[in-house]
Image 1: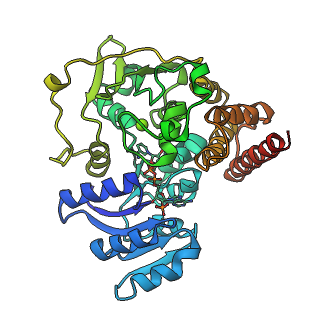
Image 2: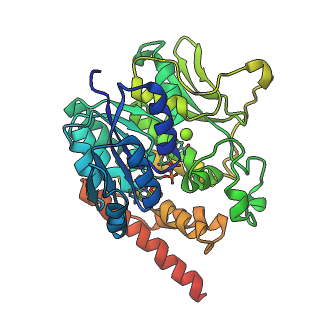
Image 3: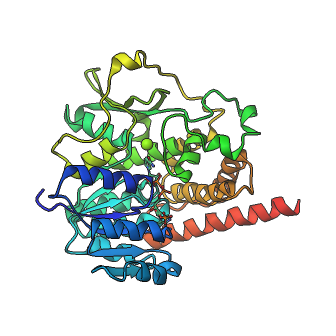
Length: 389
Ligand code: NDP
Ligand code: MG
């Protein structure tokens, strides 16, 4: 790959900030040409001052005046609104789009990057979950390479290189198990927001931290792997691995299992997606197995973590089921983060929406977005019923 001009969509988030550290260390041939945030305007302005991109986007238009003021002395083109990310993804100046936005909001810009043949480093898994077919097809047709930033999928991508695609017999995704790994379904009834936000291994943004606690995150990752690696869902397994050192494994038909190991540090998968197929020295912490001593594995408890069982059902159903699964989760997690519902209500609301939804297959982008809006509205309706009861 020749061009190394990068746009980071969602540069103020957990992945975005780690990406800036990685790019700092990679040296001057990697240039930042565009940055974006939703409403963290002060932080975005500081990033613009430091990295001097040609373009900056603030997706929440309420903050554009403030941004203009903060960077008025700098030579940068300011864009605003949700569509600004679509524009950035199509810029001739951009070679690599690193999508680190959270939620389905990242879909239009990822699709635009794929349609414009950009290299796509995707951390933002929700668009792959809801529109995996559309995105992988657009990427294929337009010569866009999709590289996963999600640590499990980066591990699979690396392990896959030791054999041919048709020699793979299954993928094994590892999961830390989150803060409630040892909990029973009964224990989950009374967990607090603070407990759900205390992830034992990874330091991530609030939405994915809650998704890890419910194990929705792993359900999403099964669907993500299905699309990224064109693998039937029956050949994708989940294994709990609390140490989070083995980031995932690939089993080949001969029976050999190839894994990728490393410290739990997102800098490695972020960097690999940017430099692929090259591997260069980076800032990630080195693995010392003798300090870790022992690695353990266990089967996930599908009774406690109902979300994971639902994820498999959704993956098998296909069509708009995954859109509803994701949108209901986004709406419910927002309610939980705002302190308005209980932890267990999240999966209950998702299941309610899935049961009520008439699944459509072979759908257009518009139909996907309709199903997304329907599920968010259904969560609101259900909550009004709870409030009246
Ligand atoms: P954060 O919440 O930390 O950051 C999200 C970023 O997206 C911020 O820059 C935020 O801007 C921006 N943003 C928020 N809402 C919108 C919107 N509606 N439109 C455009 N931009 C928006 O999330 P993470 O960095 O934790 O996660 C990003 C993605 O990567 C998620 O999809 C997550 O599942 C995935 N991921 C994250 C991992 C991690 O270690 N954090 C690991 C693997 C995957 P602002 O700051 O202004 O709100
Ligand atoms: Mg992951």
